[in-house]
Amino acid sequence: MAWITAVETDRRDERGRPLKRYRVEWYETARDDDGQPIPRYPNRADSPPKRVRRRETFDTRQAAQDRADEIAPKIARGHSPAAQRDAGNRPLSHYADAWLDGLAGQVKPRVLADYRANYRRYVAPVFADRAVASITAADVRRWRADLMAPRPRPAHARPKGTADADAETVTLSRSTVKHAFETLRRILDVAVVDGALTANPCASVPKMRATDPDAEPFTARPLTAAEIAAVADHIGRVQGHPIYGLVVLFAAFTGLRAGELAGLNVGDLMLPRIPGSAGSLSVTRTRRAVAGGFETGTPKSAKSRRVVPIDGWLADDLRAYLADDHPHGDPTSAAFDPSAPLFPGRYGRSEPLPAHLSRDEIEAVRPTILDADARLSRSGEPDRRYSRPDPHASATRCAPSHGYKWSAPVNPAGIAKHYFAPALAALGLGHVRWHDLRHAFAVMSLSAGEHYMSVSKMLGHASFVTTLTVYADYITEGDGGKNAPLRRPTAGGSTVVPMRRPG
Image (tube, one colour):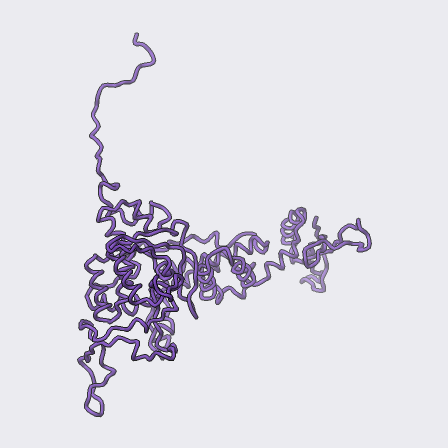
């Protein structure tokens, strides 16, 4: 139990009487660094635990009484109010490290990296050094409001030398703010479990929607089969990279996610030798580009581990690609390697090349055009800085297959930026995301009459409901539309037998 003792101080009131303060005192079990009770008599096997006297002082009796009422049940349960007070004085960074370190092995590396990035960018600058017990719901509301306020565009995303005052004003997306808030909430949950807090300050802050209710809803832009063929042709014929043109066709007619595409190896393909016969591929891993290389992971869900059929014409193209272009793709060759990446990466501009390759040798050669406002050099010739590849003329030489980086997998984000987007611009197709190729596969399959359950399996959706929700407008009547209308109800004679006879 806890008791209160009045203590006179050296200070006096206006009448010369000593001022009193009120001390809350209690006993609790002394424990070592491992949390074990310290025996009062170390030499006795049956020694009772050592007890230590704790005290806290308050200016008013009411405050002291409130504290005594608070710690009394904790003492009865064997908890240490002093230890809980010390836990509340620890900085938020202590609990953030405990939470993030505890996630290792529990979530995918990419998810853990996102949590660490959210904490480092949005939570740590404000709360890292704050005592966790001092963080209130008002602090959380103010912090979230600051995140949603307009701010200058980050230095890395604006022209070099632009000051904050001159930079374009941007706002964080609602989903970004939501993820930052969720990161703080989970860290404070750890503090609650550890006894540093009695309640999570985030619990009383209303949750926000991940999307703006007043904003225009996002709609995917699935390309048609003809548009996909035009984009692949532009990448192969005009840009001079037919291998990456095949990658676009492959992504659009298999529906793989970007990470699943990067995770494919040569051995994941099953291609029959008979021309025109359908093949298949196995999705068993994913790869994601990170600093210094690629990170290998598992598919998104259990149903994402799947076998996807490949149409006969695409199987023929892949068979020719493995035999003619891929250095480790021909199963009849001694260099065949089933663990080699299916599609290759490219050497970066600043990346050193192998000794037997040169930069001019591995690049495609394309006709160039001059900008209308091109300046002339001192010799009277047009300045090369104002020349750019002709977006419509065919390449005079395609990039040779030996100039690709076959030791590294393809990076779909790099293809989307450097090949897919320029092709879209040249063809006037507007903004289309790489992920929209996956939507295009679903739309083309459903429009051709494929059953939605089969499409859901090929896409690797965790539930058929996802397929129905996203692609309901493309499902044919025979696969779930209104194919059997209900009849109009008519008022006929009653078939209910009365329980009581009339009269």
